[in-house]
Image 1 (cartoon, one colour):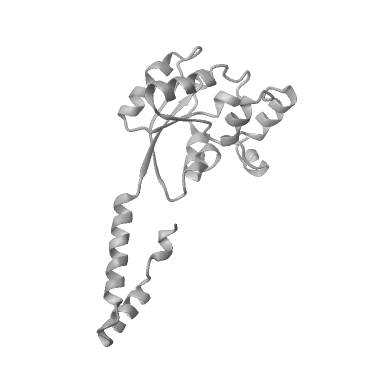
Image 2: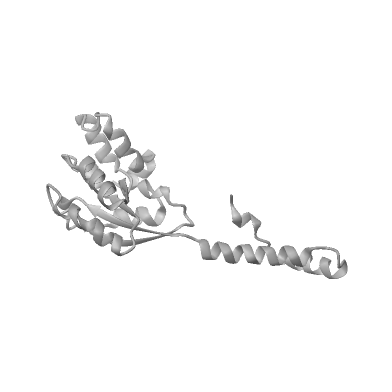
Length: 193
């Protein structure tokens, strides 16, 4: 339900107040008060989702520009959050290198910072070769820390899609689920090349 459509603009509120003063039986003040109350409740209830990002260690010097842009624009795997949803990044680190030494304790630290969701950066799937531990990492974090794990951050760049398609890297059935969150239309993929 879109509660924004329930908001009354200033003119509508004024008309309700005027009508209720003219006709004491008209419930205009009730409606104006109800809408103010609903707006206050929605403000209080607005959920802030806190997330952490874990990147593949081969990209440990990455400044995160594509991930941060995608988060701000709600593109790629970040399109699961609404444009008006408040999302806070509470941690950004690497897996620690193969076979993922940081995976054992990083989720706990992210959770202490309030993270509810962990995103594995798109580099896990587009690097060559792709990370062979994605499935293990995801299951471990979800089981041990009871946190949601999303594979992907920014949209898959077009150049990586072409390379992996030509090499047949992503043909195994499990790749469909891992690629889906970061897949985008060609225009968006090109913007992330």
